[in-house]
Length: 259
Image (cartoon, rainbow, N blue to C red; front, side, top):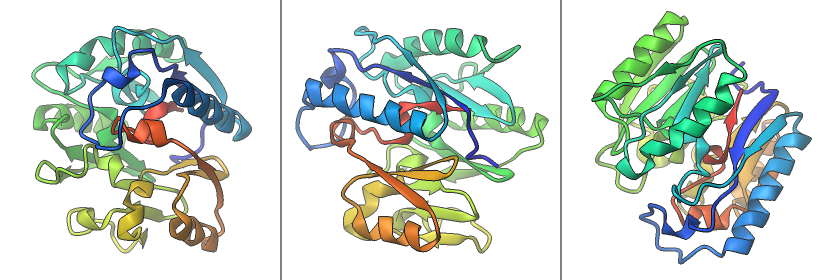
């Protein structure tokens, strides 16, 4: 099952965090609150049964706390990405070093391909890959070939014209037990083969980026209707405040690599 994890890698936000890339208009993040929310997030991962490695901050890369974009782990293997924003290319070195301790070998996305891990949504036996402003066709096809070698099918989802959704997982999550949470804007684009789909109400669209971790679902706080929908399906929900990360176009899944 794609949501069973024992390890996670996270990275502290640096003091330059507010200088990172964002299209959001929620104001400038408060650094003390950013750190406190990161501590709470890592503690929640540990409470869910994971051993968490927290890498030190790197002020040279303001977006580097969003570690999910730097690697994809699936089927017991790992591949280092090639981020679509040029300012983020240097983030992968530290993630490669951290993953080297857990995998015998690491694959890599090569130029001209670009791939952000936030565009990769894994479900049971299938991976959805967003073709976005950060992930191009070459990067997606390289990932698909790598996944196929491991017996995993891939579906491409073109979101380049959806400016409100930066990465595929900004608007889509798989929370296990055949249940997806999908932003209404993606419904007609993602083939879900009769799955149980929860569509957040418009004001709760940000909650589409939730994360199943073993026996719990992490959900950004402030989404009561979505929380109720998940609980109705027998899921235990843990809400986490990630307001400062939302200001920088980030969400719950972005803050860790889980495997």
